[in-house]
Image (tube, rainbow, N blue to C red):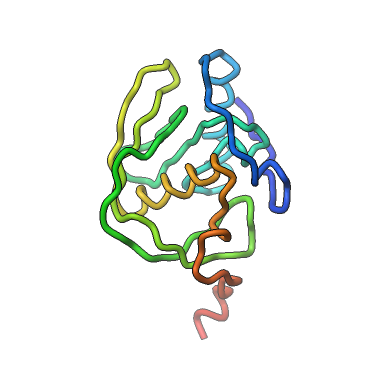
Length: 160
C-alpha cells in the first residue's frame, strides 16, 4: 500500500468522466488500498480515483459509522429520496467550502474488490459522501453544484 498524491483543482483530470472498470486486476485492488490509505492520511471521508489522477470508476468512503470502509468499483446510485442541504469540502479543492443540496438517502450498487456485487443504503453524511464521490467520477466538483462557495471561517475567528 502507499499514499498517493491528491490531484488539485484546476487539474483537467478532475473534469473528465472516469471509465468503467471492466476487469478487476491486482493493480485495481492495489489502487483501492492506496486510495483508502491516502484518504485516511488526508483525514477525508471519501476519495474517488480521479482525485489521485486515475480515470477509473472507483471510490472509497469512510464516514466513521457502522459501515466502516466502503470500497466500490463502478458505483451507481439506484435510488434517491428526501433532501438535505449542507456544507461540503473536498480534498482536491482545499480552502473552499460550499453549500450543496443533495438527496437525504441513497442506495448505491457496485462491485467489491473481488468483483462481487453489493448495495449500500446510506443517509445524511454517508449519502452526501456517495453523491460527492460519484460526481467526481463524472467530472463534477462540488463547486459546480454548490449554491454558494466560500472560504471557511478560521477556528480562531469562529470563537470570537
